Length: 404
Ligand SMILES: [Zn+2]
Image (cartoon, rainbow, N blue to C red; front, side):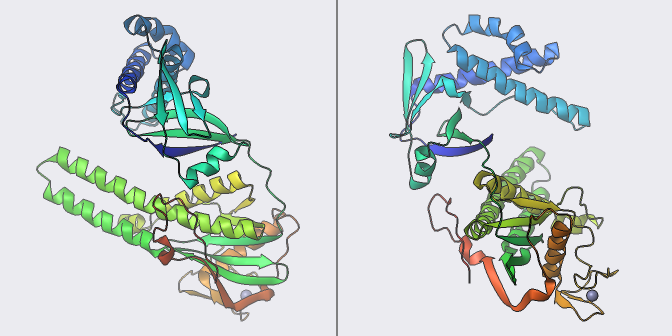
C-alpha cells in the first residue's frame, strides 16, 4: 500500500473547540509517553491498557477514537526513542511540543467534492473544516482509485493521507540509465537502436549547501557566548536549507519521471547503499551524500506511485570501466574517460553506460538491449536545468520537464 500525504490549508482559523482538541490530544500523547517509559512498554495495546483509564477519567468527553489515535502517535514516538537509545545515540525523554492531532480514517469524514472535513470532537459536537482546494488538490480528491487514510490536523493546516495499491510496473519499451553526481544526473537514454546522452543539472544544490554551511559557521562564532540561541538559529538555518534543497530535488525527480513515463522507460540507478567516501571531513561535507540519497528516494517513491520500473545496480567500478573492451582503469580522474581501445566519453555518462550494461547482463532490464557503439556522441537531451526551478505555480507542486 502506498501513502501520500497532501497538505491543505484551511479557509479560516481553526474553531476554538478544535484548538482544545489539539491541546487535549497533545496532553494524551505526552501522558502516554510518560506512562510507556515508566512501564517500559511501546506497543499501542499495552499503552492503552496502562494509560487509557486514567486519561478517560480526566477527559471524559474526548472522542474515544481520538484518544486511541493519540496512543498510536505516542507509540511511534516511543519506538523511535527506543531505537535511538539502543543505537547509543543520546536521546532526551521525548515530549511533544507541537500542537497536532491525528485521526484515523474512520474518525473523520471528508466530502471530496466540497473539500469540507467533518471532525467529531466529542459526543454531540462536530466541527467543520473548510479546505482550500487548488487544481493540485483536485487531482487527489477526484481520483477515486485513491482511498483516504489518516488525517493530521495542525493549527493552520491539515494533512490528508491518500492511499492506493502500488500499480504493477509497465513493461518498458526503452531505458534511461542515470549516474548520480554532486551536481547532476548524467546518463544515457536507449530506445531501439538509438542511444543518446541525457542530463539533469542541479548545481545550485551544492551551492545552497555551501552557503548554508558558511552561514551556520558564522552564526556559531557570533553566538558563541549563547549556546541556546546559536543552536536555535542553526536549526532554523538547517530547516530552511532542507526546504530549498528538497524543493529542487522534487523538481529534478518530476522531470526524470515525466520523461520516463512518456517514453515508457525503465530507470536504472546506482545502488548508493553503503557507499561512503573516505575523504577528509571537509570534503565529505561538501560531497555530502544526502541530497543524492534523497533524490533516489524521491525518484523511487514517485516511480512506484506511477508504476514506472526502477532498476538498482551495484555501482562498483562503473566510473572506471570501459564499456567497449571491459578494461578497468586505476584512476578516475579527469572529466573524460579515455581507453586504450580508442573509446572516449564524458566520465559520468560513461559510468551510466556501465550501470546499464550491468543491469542488462544480470537480466534485470527485461528484454532490453544496448550496444555502446550505437551511442550518438553529438546529441544531449536536457531533462532539467536550474532555470526550470523558477516557481511557475504558487504552490510549487508542478512537475516541469523540458526536452531539447
Ligand atoms: Zn576500452
